[in-house]
Image (tube, rainbow, N blue to C red; front, side, top):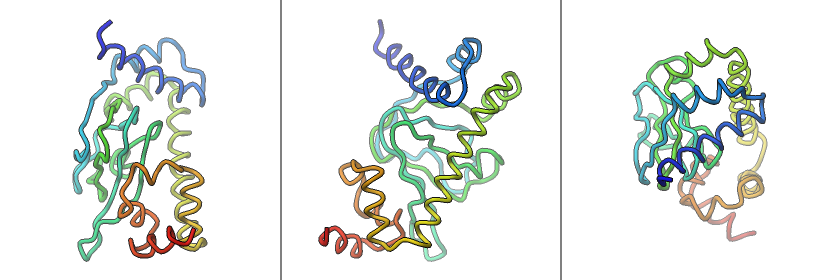
Length: 199
């Protein structure tokens, strides 16, 4: 069988397994998802979404790493998310509102991404009521992670935030630059270096 067909089947299986963990996926829904999604291979340092662009697709990360970031008034980049296999790369504000994004997305590694457009996702919601439940649950999970990150910034010390990140995603230091990690944690690179030297 063609390698690209194998890769597509594997990508579909992984995403459908993710959905099935939330709610049983009927064969009709699975078939429709297979029909309307596509697998793309994207090299590292590729922009998936520019600042001010409307997010037209959700990207299911099959392999690779993606970061989202915004630029403050001083022109500094701040990393808002570091995303890996099994994560969804999306600008929630832009995608669901179909409004210009205040975030940008770029690949940090060569990536394999299964893509579903906003138009196709909306059609799936209309055609399959059970998919609304899956979509709502995924959105809730995103907001729970977002709230947990906001609480960590408010309540935990810089060292505690770094240790928590290592506990949850120990592989991260081997895959993401320390500059991006520091930005994600809301600290400077020099502060992160001191924390790393102390543990």
